[in-house]
Length: 364
Ligand code: M6R
Image 1 (cartoon, rainbow, N blue to C red):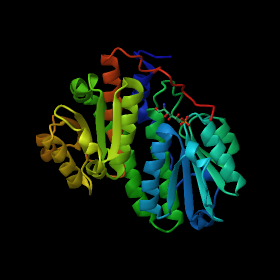
Image 2: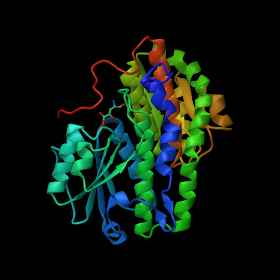
Image 3: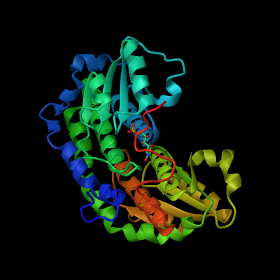
Image 4: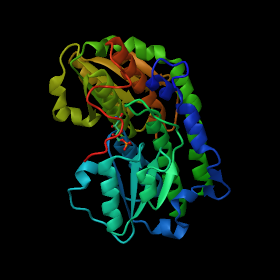
C-alpha cells in the first residue's frame, strides 16, 4: 500500500536509507565482509581471474558501478554485458570466471538466459536480487538478497541504490580474499558506506533544488547528461529515469566524449545536466561544462557542498554532501530520481506506470 505517499515511486525513493541500513547491518565482521551467500572460500575467490556481470536496464548500470569498485579495490578484470546482447555474442570464459547477474525482479528473461549459458560453460553464478525465491535465486549458486522490500513502480529506485551497495560489499569481500586490501582498509570504505543513508536523507531535505530545475526539462525535447568516472554511470541512470517516466529524450555521455559528436546538439537554451562531484576527474568535467555554457547551454550540475566554481557556472546546482568518490554515486543519483519524478508530475504523467513498459520483462 501507499501508506500516505501519493505514488509508489515517492514511497520507494523514501525507503532507500532504511533499505541500505538493513543491507549493511552485520556485514562487517571480525575478519572482514560477511557474505556467506557467496558460498565460496577465500581460496576460491582468490582464484577468480575474470568476472562477467550481466544485467538489463537499471541493473546494468549497477553492473557498471560494481565493475569500477571491483577493479579498483580487488583488481580483478570485469566485463559488464547487456544480457540481450550477451546471449548472441562470443563469450570468453576461463577456468576461474565468475558470473554475477543483477536483477531486481529475478525474472528478467534475457538475464536468466545469460546465467544459464554461463552455468553451462562451467562458471559459478552469483545473483544480486530483491525478490525472495525468484528464478534468479533458484538457478544461481549463491544469492545476495538486497532486502529492499517490494518495488512496485516501474522505474527502479531503491533496488538501484541497494544493488550498488551489494556490489560494493562483493567488491570488498573479493579485495580481502585476493589480498588487495587489508581488514583496516576495508573497514574504512565500509564506514563510508555507512554514511550513505544519512547522506540520502540530507538529499531528501534538498528536494526543493530538484523542483527548481524542473522548468529546464519540462518543455525540453532533448537533454544531455554528462559525467566522468563513477559519475558517468550516474548520468546514464539519471537519463534513463528522465526518459522512462518524464518522456524527455535524455542522452547520457561520458563527459569527454561530448567533443566527439554530441556537442553539435547544443544551442542556446539546451539543457545539460553535469554530474560533477569532488573527485579526481572533477576539473575535466568542469571544462566540459564551460564548453557547453559557451554554446548557450543551460546547466544543471550535481556537485559537492562548497564547490564555488560549479556554483558560478551552473544555472542550478543539486548539492550532495562530501563523500568518497566510489560511494557518491549511491547518493548523487537520488537527486536525479527526484528530478525525473518532478518533471513527470509537472507534465501530468503517471510516474508509477509509464507507457509501453512492464515492471519485469519476462520475454527475450
Ligand atoms: O528486474 P530487473 O532488475 O532484471 O529489471 C531490469 C530492467 O528491466 C529494469 O531495471 C528497467 O530498466 C527499469 N524500468 C528501470 O527503471
